[in-house]
Amino acid sequence: MKAMTPSAALAAIVGSTPLPRTDVTKKVWEYIKKNKLQDEVQKRIIIADAKLKEIFGKAKADMFEMTKLINSHLK
Image 1 (cartoon, rainbow, N blue to C red):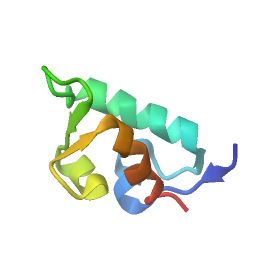
Image 2 (image 1 turned 180 degrees about the vertical axis):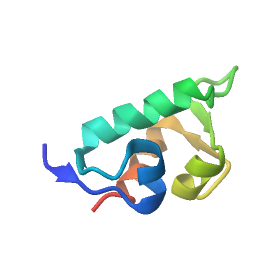
Image 3 (image 1 turned 30 degrees about the horizontal axis):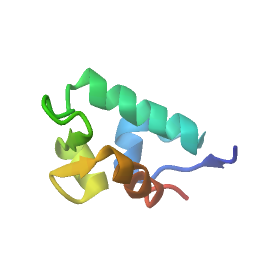
Image 4 (image 1 turned 180 degrees about the horizontal axis):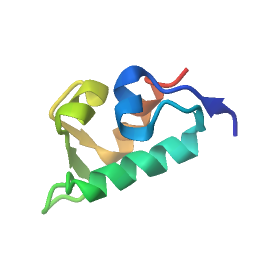
């Protein structure tokens, strides 16, 4: 897997070191679980805090679209 450089918004969550996409996704999930950002009823829905809102561009995102939204913040 090729290491990708995260944008400044994404670096606030995963760090600024280049990482493979798989590691970026793992770190974002760790952040979501640590901060309890999954909807209690619909676990597929991620409720964005200030940091995630910069990445998602909206208040909530489905876990399946999350990867697409994160990829736009990788170079």
